[in-house]
Length: 293
Image (tube, rainbow, N blue to C red; front, side, top):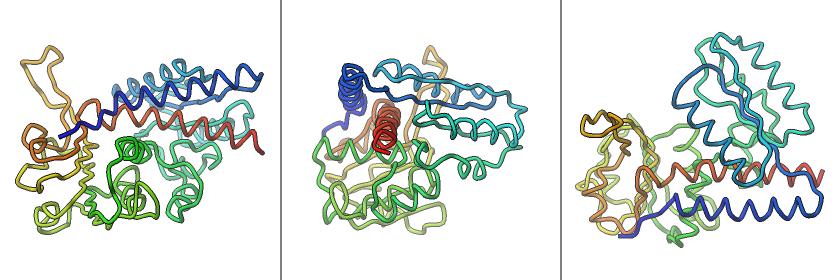
């Protein structure tokens, strides 16, 4: 069993990006500028956005954090998005999800200029991804592809089972794993809450990508020997023995499934760190695209 070490690979990627940013500085070029909008005071979102800002500093990007109160209206948020769309100094930006209930998330995502949509959530970018055209790939799926590629995990002709059909992870992964190229060229089964006999399906899988958010859902008896496991789940589970009062747990019963796996991502330290690294990579791509135009 080999760990797919997202923490290490993400650091490698950040080092590569930092070297490219330094080259841009040495040539007198504008460095990438990433902006983030956060609405409200959700603790997890604030932590996540804060880590994105730190990552920008780490690689030499400029960054802007825009905090808006939880009472912000949809109109006010759309006005701010329009400002960022029209700001030539901003190469890419994200709107941190989830949003307060008075705001229509789909309307917000639709309002973002696709050329600055470094989260890869705009329908134009999603459509291009589905057609195998050059575009921004959502950061978490992009990170999974990068892990598979850097560890040279064979995907051609393999049976990939994706558990979960969210627009952020499950659905894009089902498209990307079936595309021509590497990683890709696998036969994909997309499963979800209405899938019957899921153990029968997972036990035939060569690769399992799970993004349910249900702690320890995938058990050893649900997988075959030498399976590749990508665990996207991340849930806080109460644990009085831990100083924090909780532990971070994935969708996979790691202790038991890892004994059967050929490759497996840990939680934490697997897919999570890759998401921010690939957001930076998308922002660098956005800067290069704008420079060409």
